[in-house]
Length: 319
Length: 238
Image 1 (cartoon, one colour):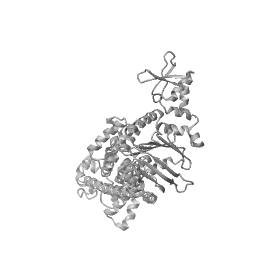
Image 2 (cartoon, chains in turn brown, cyan; image 1 turned 90 degrees about the vertical axis):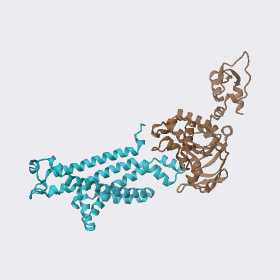
Image 3 (spheres, each protein chain N blue to C red; image 1 turned 45 degrees about the horizontal axis):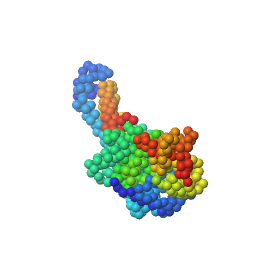
Image 4 (cartoon, rainbow over the protein chains, first blue to last red; image 1 turned 90 degrees about the horizontal axis):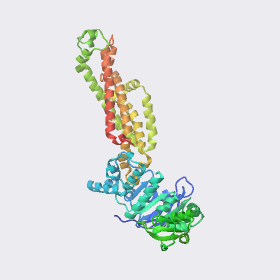
């Protein structure tokens, strides 16, 4: 697997001709290699602008963007883009090409051999959860979710160290969306790449991001931190409002029961509600509140009790 | 045309009773004059059409690429094209005679103009039909503008291009019959010839006319099949 790249935004400002104010104002951001970074914010926050500046679909006027220390200005745009995976909301698969040909687009531009392209295509179909037979199908024969899987495979084709994703799941139904989010997270663990992911949905940002950059109107960076830190210590009123009043519960949703140091299981007096170790603290709290209990029994993968979580302990996690 | 036959109506040939009686349609005349009249006229008609459509296509495609790249060029070209199209074909042929004479060139200039005005807007529309997200994805993946054009926009324009070719071919086959007012060539010639006879000879008019229609139908069908062959993605189920 290829290495991931560190991305640095260095005082990047972007103004569009004929529009008042900046789309992006002195954005400075360091995204460590291998980080899943989500750019989130209301429309007009400049998040898509920030994303498209990286592969020079939008020209950079002020400031600099560096990929592994190298300014994006040093490369021809075409050359730069071939080394960066790019996934967009409406996928933009080539309708006149089969899935296989779509995935092979950049490898062909880079002059890969036929056998190498075939092997890579087969590998990618597996990776994104498609059938080998799908290579021969046309995009119009696929569902929305399958199309976005192809879009992802196409973006990963030459194993780029950086993946740019512009609201990739925005057009999908909630179930498909949740499944793809889940799979993308898992994929990110296996192919450790730097990902810059744009969304306007704070829930998606919290679920997906290792780090979240919240941008506000006028292209100002409101806060850049881990989801937990943002939920625990919102930087200002704008962030507080943006993440919502249930931020305590959202924080608890980030923790799984199996990750906690649980109380020992008492012998005679076991809690009456139980949950699996894979579920979140938020779900556990919800179960306790619902049943009027203050303690919950946590079960391991094999169904045996592994510990007890109390409401007080859950509250402690928020300190 | 044949010189055989009586002095009054030469083209009637040696003449069966059907021919001398000028019945509605005489098969024997068609068989007898296929080799010296209808066959050559059909071949000339195909040639007139083929040259007009090929030259017109090359010109229209080049102009469409230009208009596609420089959006500002599109409108002037379209306006000129629309003007040409409003000319009645018979007038356009005559209008050119003072400049290029009663020549093949005159005929082809007129025919090419018509194919051009039909094909140009179709090809431009086809090139612009590529969905914006497809173009954005192409750019984002690092295709050059040229690669985007020839690997994405032109293939996606094929259905519109083939559609334009069908109209261009069928109308050129029709308009090319009028070329006989300038030049003794094509299926129009036997028609005009037979009409000009003291007693218009129905069989010759009908047989040449039917051949023109048949030629148009066959070419149209061939283009439909060609279109399907080059756009396999349009035939898969959704």
